[in-house]
Image 1 (cartoon, rainbow, N blue to C red):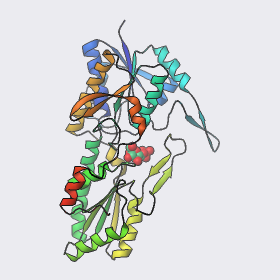
Image 2 (tube, rainbow, N blue to C red):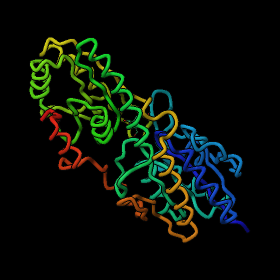
Image 3 (cartoon, rainbow, N blue to C red):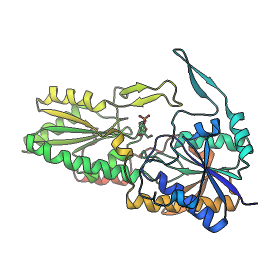
Image 4 (cartoon, rainbow, N blue to C red):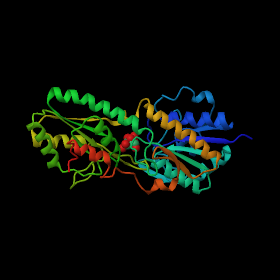
Length: 361
Ligand code: F6P
């Protein structure tokens, strides 16, 4: 009997998910003759037993497609499944339903493509006895055990284009422009897109900023005849003596806090302190949409095909990671140890500082 595998995509989407689904499915069918299934909307589909067969033709032509053909959810946690009863949010353990559905479909391995939330759940499912392998994804680039995640390069590309466009209007109007980017508690997107887009001040969560230093830098530029400034701020950036800016609480989400809004707070403070006209732009979900870059397509294809080898070799309870350009197996429990943050000694921070970029410290 042919081996059966199932794929799911969980958590916030990013460019390159379909490229992974395609790579896994094509290799599994072509090289090993597996039957491939896809659970819909991440763990929601596994809990509710909502799945469909993926044939070769179903994944043909999706390499460049943004989003995920399987759908996703960043709420459905089988161990703490939230549902609303009136105004209240109740949680229940649905892991036994998941185990039942997994056994019922008689799958040999479940491929979980997701970020830290999805992969931490995958580890718990492995502990229940399920054969699971993981593929790390996120625009935030903050997963432990891998040097890079697919989706990151595409997000950096989008933000860089955004900063380029902001540059010209900032120049014309002689304004301070603040570009807010995603990344949760990590500053990877702000750092890389900020450098690529030639930002003057980069504010990242790993280096709490001093508002006075930021104001000084803007005024200094102005004094030197630079009549505009570009500030790139990560949504998780915070002042030295303060806290992050929270945009909303999503009660039925496994991680309820959504960051956002720091650029507006900062914009007002800078305008008041400098008397220079200031505007804020939030890149938001644009960073997760659209087609993957060539780099992400290649990475997604490498990760997706490697994971099929892991299944063939029965290397379960692990994810595929990137180390020094090569691919490695990483135990899934590595992910649960916390986010992979930017080191304050990161060579890119040093390079940026050496050309006069301020980190507000
Ligand atoms: O983890 C990916 C991410 O886009 C973060 O950068 C951001 O903080 C969060 O997801 C936004 O979540 P949502 O899509 O629920 O607004």
